[in-house]
Amino acid sequence: MAEERIISFNDYITKGCLEFFENDGNLQPLELVDYFMDNPALAMHCVEHHYLIPAVLLTVSRKKQGKSVEQLQSDLKKACDRAKNVLGGFCGFYGTCGAAVGIGIYLSILTDTNPRSVENWSLVNLATAKSLISISKINGPRCCKRNTYLAFSSAIPFVKENLGLDLGTVPKITCHHYPQNDDCKGKECPFFPA
Image (tube, rainbow, N blue to C red):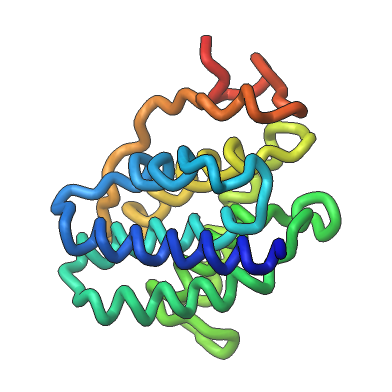
């Protein structure tokens, strides 16, 4: 049953990304991620975030690059297949948050990086590391929404600085998901409402 929910929501993300790609000329990554995270079908903590992150970033990146919808479809399929390998609880059980891994999935697809690549191999790992460092500065417990925001906040300037791809600015983020999080850190979270 849980697997059906994951496939269903991942399909929803894919469909939504393709619709935004074809219809919205000025996509902002954090607006798009909030659109998906605001859907009540997306649990507070769930593996779908691991796909959501690369899907949104690939959608905005490919739009900015002027790529075709077919390119994005191919990218989203790769991202979804890779994200399925990032299990729930990765942050606590494996020591790397799925949000940071999502940044690595995004950049490896964007730069066509693979395990034998030379030029971009370190770039992909560096982006993942910077995202993970940002996430690690806030102690636990887990919060998929917070870590998604932190991953995006790290990746957007990284991509501009290293690839010259301007995905916009990182706006002031105020979380409105905290009422659904029994483990919310409250004022210790940088996104908690003042």
